[in-house]
Image 1 (cartoon, rainbow, N blue to C red):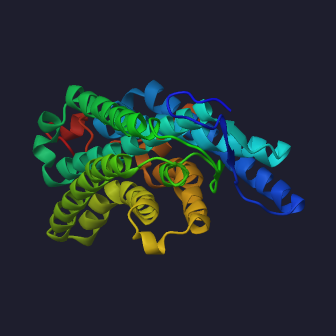
Image 2: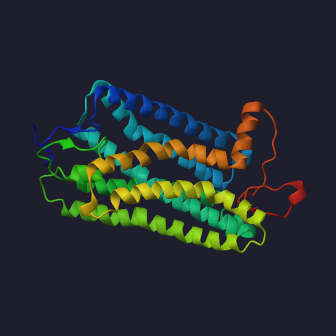
Image 3: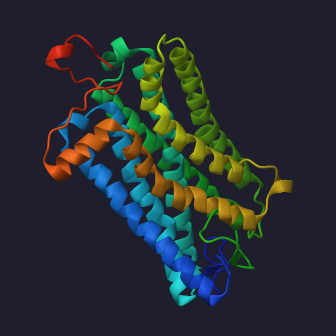
Length: 331
């Protein structure tokens, strides 16, 4: 073994899901099917938003960024897991592990910020419909999306700088199916207090602050919806943000359960199961949730597939106008 920059091990062993061979094959088929469907769904959403002019609004710009993120997110963890199911080779090099950790943290932090930006966008569309187009122009939406990516990758770089400087003397077995922060820090043979402090501070900034934006936005949205006099109006307003709210609840529940629990409640076996939720299930469900509940996306998909024109101008947050609705914005 070599000693390079404090590193004493050349590879780690990902324990994954140790089960019997028949169950391993079943898990391989299940994860492969979800992986391929996730790639297909998110690629379809990205292409549809890119090619359909009626979807060139901030809400769908953010949705396109989210689907593009999910394409990369699932590729960070699942292909390596599928290979381990087939070959039973659970080894990963030190460089490969740190690379996987970097992109996983970067994409996870980007998604946290992006979901907060999407919540703020829904707040403007529902609570400030007449000012929506001036408050959320496409140029601002593009900058907010770019800031989400930039903050996520910068946060990941800062975390990795401290984690990669630690020494790893052995054992080298990671009780997880991918390289995650806590399992790796548990293997270090040097003082990890500084790395844990940096991880904690950045977690507060990248998880709790976006969550605060989400909670504040939806508190204002719910208060506005409750003031709508008709049940039909309330249903119409809530339907425009219900899909995003469902994604937020699933993602933040699984993330906080994994990274914000007291150490006494922390077990790696439970952590692996919950990690499947936000690394595999959420990217798989996101396109279905948005497509099944969003009329404009469904209409654009029908028009693309069937070549027919459908009416799709009644979603809050759209800056497009119609001849019969001149003067109305954000509705």
